[in-house]
Image 1 (tube, rainbow, N blue to C red):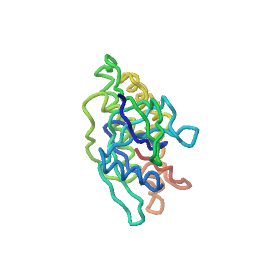
Image 2 (tube, helix red, strand yellow):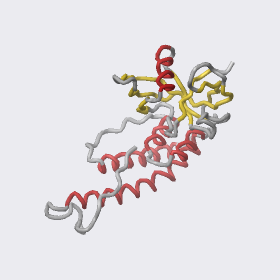
Image 3 (cartoon, one colour):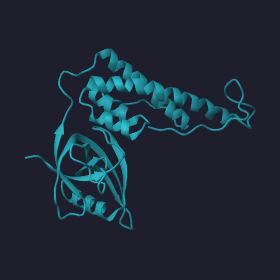
Length: 231
C-alpha cells in the first residue's frame, strides 16, 4: 500500500538532504503540524495546484521531517524541516482533517545515471565559488563548505542553494537522472555567478563612497547597491 502523507502546498522547494525554515500560521496547518509532532513528524511539501491550492495528481514533492519546532504565544510556529525522499502524489484522500492528505509514491534517481567524476568535481568547484560570492555580497565571513561527497547529495545541495526561480528548482527536483541534474546546474551556476560578480562590484563601490573612494579601481561615484542575493 502506498504511504499516506499530509501535504503542505508551498511554492518554495525542499530538496532531499537539505533543510528549510518555515513559518506556520494558518489554523489548518497549525493542526497539521500538531498532528505531525504527535506522530512521525513528517509531512510532504509540494507545489500548490489550481483548485483550492490542492497539489494535483502527478505532482512531485519532498517529504519534510520536523527537526526543530518553536511554538509562539499566539499559536504560530517557526520550524526547521529536513528533506527526505521525493514523492509523486498518486491520489488525494477525502479526510476529516482540515489539511490535504494524499497517497504518495516515493522514488530515487534512476540507476546508471551517475555523472563522470570530472563533472562532479566541476559542479563542486562552481558551487563553492557561488557560495563564496554570496557570502561576500552579504558581508559574511568565509567558511569551509561541507558538501556531500556523493553526486546525488551534491546536486541536491547545489539546487537548494542556487538563488533561482522556484519553477526551475521544481524541475531540478523532478529530474530522475543525476547526470542531467548536474549538467543543468553546470549551465545555471555560471550565469548566477556572473550576476553575483556584477552585484558584488556595485556593492563594493557603494561601500567605498564617503571613505576616500572605491575599494576597487574605477571609483564608486554615482553607483547604486546591487540586489542582495542568497542561497
